[in-house]
Amino acid sequence: MELPIEFRNITEELAAGIPVKKLISAANAISERYRSEAASGKPLITNDTEAAAYAIVRMPATIGASGSAMQYAADRYDGEINTALDIGAGTGACSWAAAEVFPDIEKITCLEREKSMIDFGRTLMEKGDFPFECQWISRDITAGFDMKADLVTASYVLNEMPEKMQEKLISAMWNATAKLMIVIEPGTPKGFKNILRIREQLTESGAKILAPCPHSDKCPLPEDDWCHFTARVSRTKLHKQLKGGDVPYEDEKFCYIAAVRDDCTPCSSRVLRHPKIESGKITLKLCNTDGISEKIVTKKDGALFKKARKADCGDEL
Ligand SMILES: C[S@@+](CC[C@H](N)C(=O)[O-])C[C@H]1O[C@@H](n2cnc3c(N)ncnc32)[C@H](O)[C@@H]1O
Image 1: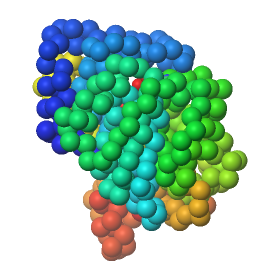
Image 2 (image 1 turned 90 degrees about the vertical axis):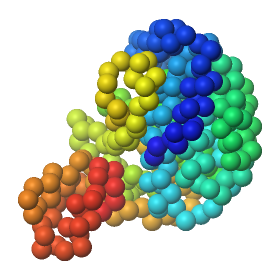
Image 3 (image 1 turned 30 degrees about the vertical axis):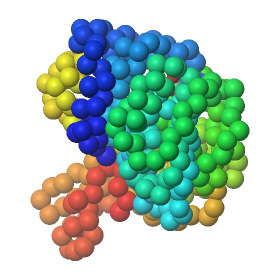
Image 4 (image 1 turned 180 degrees about the vertical axis):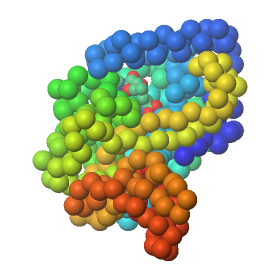
């Protein structure tokens, strides 16, 4: 999922009063902190310049990742989503993605600890004509919350906390979930480990896995493998300046888990890697209801061949 260009213009307009040099050093400071202090539970973004740098450099990618994860879940979900809760909302990425994927939402609540992130996110929604009511609440999410919503999401949040804290937060999120809960994490081996632990905790609490897995049983991947997907997002001139490099797009790798309270029908097979396409033959690594398999599809398979040719990593087959 890609942000409309007007949206990016508003983000960059909001940061226009800050010299580019200051934004570059804020972007560098954030990534250094994410490298050295991740999972510490400490605040990683603490002032207005860093919040603006985050919105320019990271928000397009986190919208792309959370939007893709939500779309995969929505493809398998036939209930109606009217309310949403965005946990660790940052500058609102997940809420913007939810607005695109679940058009029946009437109200969203964003919980966030950092004032600078709340201020930027709230102003962005005001200037960007966010399509429904949004309430921003200043809250340390590890201290618990008692609101409920049809959809509860946390995007790129759990990886900022130690394991015990994650467990407590997942339990609070599941209690808050009336229908569907989605957690998105970075597409790294560590992000995937978090997702596996979250998946186990959720199924033990009675949740049914909607996506990406075709079932709610134990994950069949071997320990040294990890399931992740990619969202491609374009980069603006300012984005390139802040991150360095000339490539006009970036590929954001992410992992996710979507779980529901009611019975559901997950897909029967999901593509786990970019398909290998050769003349007249496509090789796919699939996760199926009965485990992992490699499938070769040839022109003789007709419609399946056509579907496999268009399929990408993360898609159903
Ligand atoms: C990497 S940002 C992700 C923001 C947004 N969800 C996104 O996908 O772009 C993580 C956010 O979680 C917030 N956060 C981390 N720990 C928190 C806590 N204990 N209470 C409230 N917010 C927290 C941070 O302040 C930050 O804004």
